[in-house]
Length: 422
Image 1: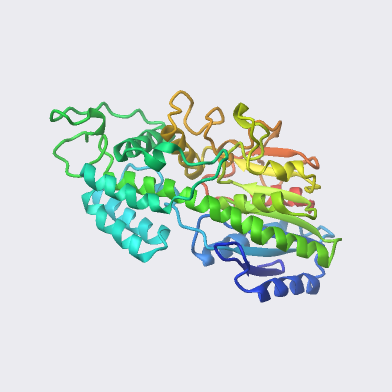
Image 2 (image 1 turned 90 degrees about the vertical axis):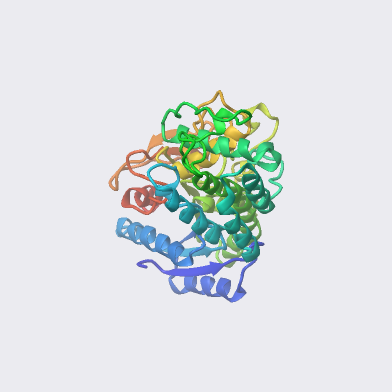
């Protein structure tokens, strides 16, 4: 790491795992005589080494770009017990064998289900997914992971909470095809009483699932959808109960230091929750492929009479500089998560996962309904004039190839401008 760095770990509830780490982080800032504190949060990845790699790669690119600045930035890396999602390049189901799908599902269960007993139960049910009873049992056990979702724009659709299993699996199928821009194959015909839209293309292919997609591949995305709502509450707790007090403590120690919040994926929810709950100011908020609703900052979203969960971060006046948001439909992880939610909510008329979909992700579409300035993410030499107190959507189609592609020089350059290092 080229910049001064300290890590602070948090528990599921959002409290510091070791208060001495907070003291050490404050001491690091003093030793570095830091003018700017960049608090970074990772997203859905329970591998702390991967989180540190993100901070190192992004931080080193940032250091290179800011070499001529008279500012002295330092990084505090937030480490929290997030949950693994499916790998980005395996989000959509095609091109892998049935055996590979089963293995991938088993691996996802091991990574994303923290209760060993429940993980064992779900793994044991993978062999029965080709039966309606097996799918019902798998979904029933997966549902025990669901948080109540709260009363906001990201609450779980009722079908996910209590709908029939084959309806949930079919919603996943529709969403995967929509994100891949593929026309679903025509339904097969079969025995009387078997719904045509739940049949495999080849009735003689055991476990082939819906239209040739394996039940295991669909179950993997069902589990990811449930995991989203598990992560939602935890990320909010870490931001509100852990990162917000950390911001206030840094400000109390030295009010002249400028504080910047940066979050990737569910880390964008962490830092947005922090910005909503701080009592002292920050200089900027940067969200890299954020995994929450594109209505998160919106007043009266969708004419509901309610504000987005993080509208308070904008309304409280404590962000003195810009809000910068990268977004692209290359991010299939975020786009698919919301496409599934939309399909489960019966939103069949809208383009699944796009900005006109009531269920859409901020990492796919940017902030919607906030009058955000629409810009494009340029290369490492691009120049930006971000306005203080304003939201900026950066369309990143040319510079971000996937959900995790957020540490490259182009992204670091936009971050350097948001922070004021360039």
